[in-house]
Image 1: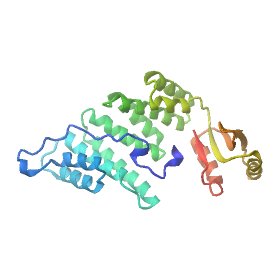
Image 2: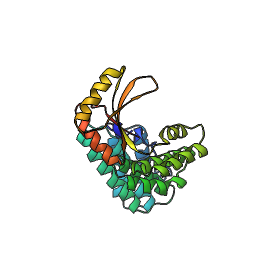
Image 3: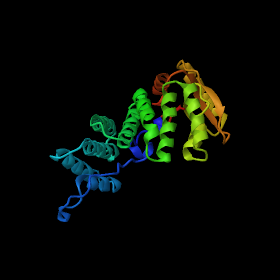
Image 4: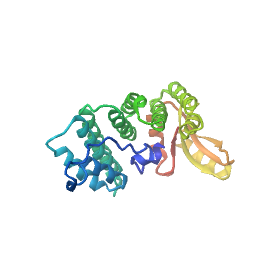
Length: 269
């Protein structure tokens, strides 16, 4: 999943968590919906500019509570994280901006379940910034207080992902087993089963229909000082893999050496 991060919005990794319990509508019916209500509606409609405008209106309001301010910063962060990215560099900038807004939301000390929803969003951003320690800490803090079973299942699964990226493979395998026991027959359990059992990282360089081109690639990579092997996938294809990399950083370094020739190279797990 890490290597599919060209699209980094929450939609590819984190179920959209729209905070409920907004400030009641204004007493004057002619005044229209309150800013937080409008922000939630705009987020559901993917009108990110309207989300930002409504959130800013709430932040600027004379009367605010810790809950309403936290909601406003959270919703603004969701808009920044989710909006389209015109150029690749915008993705990194928006992640940083969204993270700052989620941190501002948490600084308001909101009550539950708002706090856990915000922590889950912050964890999502941190994961895509390769800050797995922050991601793990926030998903651990949020998991039990998320409002739905589906959200809790995703949080537990992502705890395992973060542990794995930190090289804590035994912990990750235990977490993935727990996901399968606690949420059987779920999408989260299916993904956990696919992730379980890993003890190291590997870089999948390329896949070929026959062994010959795979062996040619292996010779070239060995000439560069790498140690690739040829494996077979479930379809019987020949897969060139550089295995047994002890840390995620080591896997990133290896991928960097081959990605110019093999842009589809993947880090697994």
